[in-house]
Each structure stands twice: as structure tokens, then as C-alpha cells.
Length: 172
Image (cartoon, rainbow, N blue to C red; front, side, top):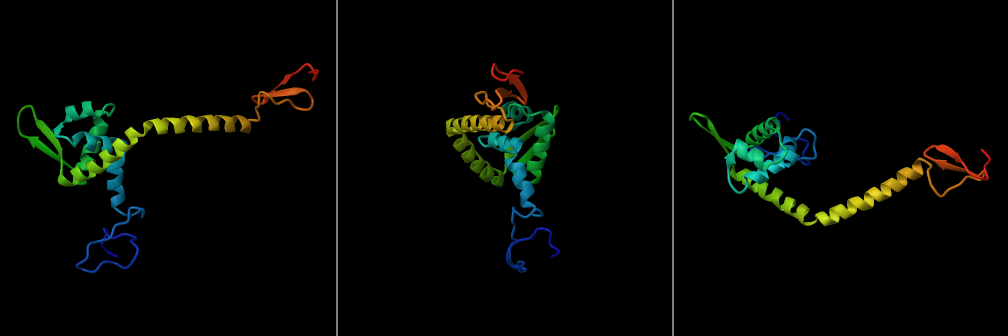
């Protein structure tokens, strides 16, 4: 297949009048990079921040708390290249550059915002799950280290953190 936009898709290659088939689960599919740009930490936050209205670079940087100037610049370039963000540079002094979502970017951002709202609305469940996981993991790791504060070996020696502590019975 000579067309790089058609990748490891199930079924036959599309005919001349058919649209190419993309499969994000295929490592060579170009949709994978776009998905990464849109759903990565800075991409999703940038798209979400631009959803209500366009803004200038520094406004966007303040809105997406924690993003560095370099990362925001890289993110905007990638999103612009993918057709999700429009960059409007005005020839004035000092230069003014505004960023806004394209129609495709608005559609993607709308889906991301739905996911963001779902996650934010269910954070109490997430935090409870993390606590359960951490408690279980700590018990599991302690068991793997062979440490159990209440366990004493037959010879009267209590094990602790890989070392031994003599007890009254043990005589060590």
C-alpha cells in the first residue's frame, strides 16, 4: 500500500472513491499522534481552556496552571498542525497572537470537557479507591519483605525489616 494514511486496517484497502480507514490501535496509524496531542496533559487542558473563547498566549498560560512557556508553545504548535487550534498573528507592534479552536478542535474539546467533568464529579470515588489501593499495597509490600510485627519465629527471634531482634526467649 503506497498511501501512508491507510494503515494496518482490517479488511481490504479502500477503493479510489472510498475514504481511508484509520485504526488508532495500529502503531503506524497517524491518528495515534493526534490522539496523543489532544489527550496528553497539556493538550487536553489547552483545548479545554480554549473552549469558551479564544485567548492570547499569556492568558492561556495563566489559565493552564503549571504549564511552562516552552511546553505550551510546543502544545499549541502540535494542536495547530493537527487542525484543532487556529493561530491568528496580527501584524502590530508589539505583536499580538490569538489562539482559538477550529470547528474540529471544538468538537474534540467538547468530548474532553465531558470526560473532565466526569472525572471531577467522581473524584471522591477515585480518592477512596486510591486509599484502598495504597493500604493493600503497603500490606502486600510488608509481607514481601517478610516483616510482620506480630510474627515470631519458633526460635524466639522476632523479624523486623530484614534484620532480627532478640526476644527474652531467644537468648540472642
